[in-house]
Image (cartoon, rainbow, N blue to C red; front, side):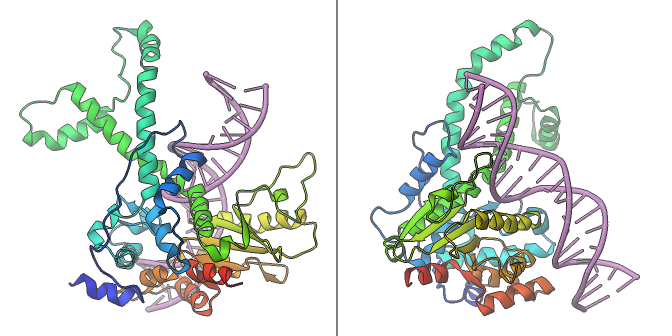
Length: 380
DNA sequence: CTAGAACTACACTAGTTTCC
DNA sequence: GGAAACTAGTGTAGTTCTAG
């Protein structure tokens, strides 16, 4: 089937021009001990954005996906949902396919090349991490020798040894092997495989605050917003006007992101969550209650959720959750609802009550996109 | 009635930050 | 310098609900 026809169908107003954009290089550079730390993330973001260039609110979502979206290794497709539910044959595989094709088209790249154009933050950070790890390994070698010394000659396993994995490798390759590979080589191979797998587990440590940093970086590069607002990343609440310091023995409260309008002093507290779990929906309400209790100016403040969640039920729940007699969130913002459309509608008809609920919220504007939220913010 | 969707709850990994 | 505390998002399993 011709891919471009699907792209046209599901990508809405985004024009797909496969191969148009050159893949940005993954660069390695010197870094301190914390590859995923705030400082290194800030540096990676500075490197990513062209110096002195403004961000177009309508296209900001592209930067979010280029920086943060990743390929699920088990399916080879852009990640939009838990990997177990995305396995071939299961319902979310169809949605992942549709989303993958949509996002490639919307970014103007070939679906087969998408991996080279996204996940820049993590790929650069892990390159830095690998560098730091290589440095550390050599440093610890003398200590390792010292620790193992008393047990010399007892045939203790070497670090990194994984007999089961080794037997899988040798077992499946046996018909093609003239001889058993040297154990040194096998251990090296298993270590590399383990490192490869464990890299993926580190992603969650970057996505959380990395998403907050990315949104802040975008806000700062949109002149109509930046000129009018003070932008705070993970500020203690009492650093914002109109919020008091917590009592001596209670913890200081932080919020993911905050915007304060310099003219009207309107305050917007933002919760940035790449994805949402139902057991953390509770947290939205209790967070808000805490914020509300620290408010001392007697003024309303906005509470906004920015997310890339794809589960329709969770999105609908976020749109519908209430406190007292009004919606909890002033706005619920998805990185790009067109991606949701692509996944839910796709070439294969979708069923399910959650999807219908989520689509209602998109159509009504209750669930908005980063583009319209940023544009509206700039036009105030 | 049944398969799949939705929900719930907890486990897990691996990072940063804080405190001594 | 290192342990403990904290935080993030994801994995996963069991249960309940619901559309066809």
